Length: 290
Length: 270
Image (cartoon, rainbow over all chains, first blue to last red; front, side, top):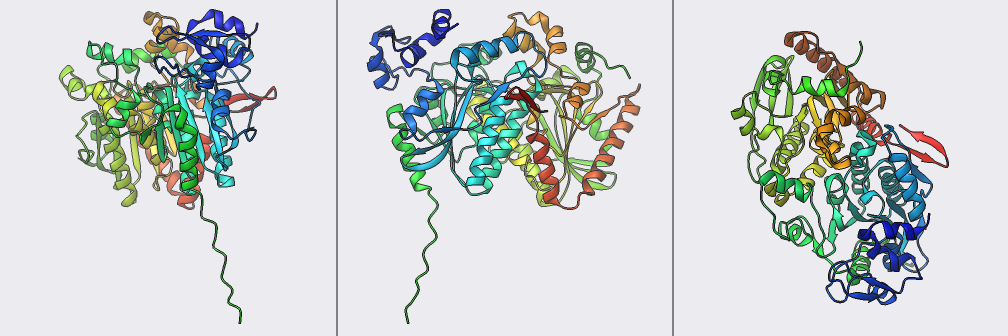
């Protein structure tokens, strides 16, 4: 079973993935406006539709290619793969299939890289893997990333997206929220910088933990960010919510996000922020000659 | 003791006669003064918090509030807190730290409230902040799940040195009904989901996620005596820690080790 099967199966992911991973595909259709886009040009435009401005959801490795300086990324803990801690029906098969299709064992890629010459730990969640729900692997890899960053005195940049906790792992998934937040706290107490970049969609347990704990919280435009699902709230109040509810713009206006940054400015913005937070080198003592 | 399946416990904890936080406070504390408000936005009746005397020792009490009548339940929003509820909890936790009081959390909620105001005021941020602060709170923290431990809204009050559960309490990442409707598109398969999710006190102790199960006995009076003894023993254990840094290190390690995954075909963790 190859990548192509996944594309045929769900239209939802096909738009995002074809041009990134399949060199044979020449034309893709924008899910937002239906425009036919040349795959190469779409990729060059960072997977933003030039007609309607819709942001395609990125594979984790595509995001890293866009953000990290060329050839500087080194993955950490790549071998961690999901187990099936509560024998949840169908989970092990589903995870194994996705892992084969996407070439990554779970929903997050972590490692170290340079961004504009500054060394940083980076983690990118990938919505193509079970909507980047957080189970033990996501929790463990992010925790190890924070621990590594604390030990090496490096900043952490996390690109979040998630449907929330991975219910197929039961309580193991819920407690990852506490585990990652605790590691983020230790990193912070060491005086180190943590930047989160909220991407589409960041919801549930990830919003209610490390996504909201950055020293600086950035977001891509028109991204869905929230705690509860939109339909759950609509069901509770019995009315339809406005389009911009739970968008990054909504978050910014309510004071829960520092800045909305267009995709083509993300790398340069991160470069500047990382530079501004570089630890000052200890000043050389002036030795007065006698 | 044969443990009951989660689906049966679900019926027990939804019994309208099951004690609620006001009952626990009346029975377990010699005195209690409720304190209100988050000092930022509002008072949230879904969280009850204040200072009480436990066997003569002042402690800070924080818990989800449910009622017994429909009116009481509406006033308390059925134990589903808004962001201001979690911010009040955090304010009082910091106050406890300042005055060197232990914190007792009573967890009983279907989950954090899902609504427009909750989103506008940062429900996610409020819960995240609880996890971030409780992990380093420099005073002993004991949480006891007394009924429903519903997802992030429960976890916000359960980052503690010791987490206990009443025998029939449940603690889950998602309500069984929610799980059934999302995964199987059929909310009526709630009981099946409850039994699949492994959410009983026995399950969670096996996973190393909680430290103790409090037997409920036959009468409410027996249950209250058992809770009181469990809290008092647990507090004594924490008071016996050599210093705060040791206690915080253990608190961190307890959450740090949770997770099951494969690494080069080898199983790790738990």
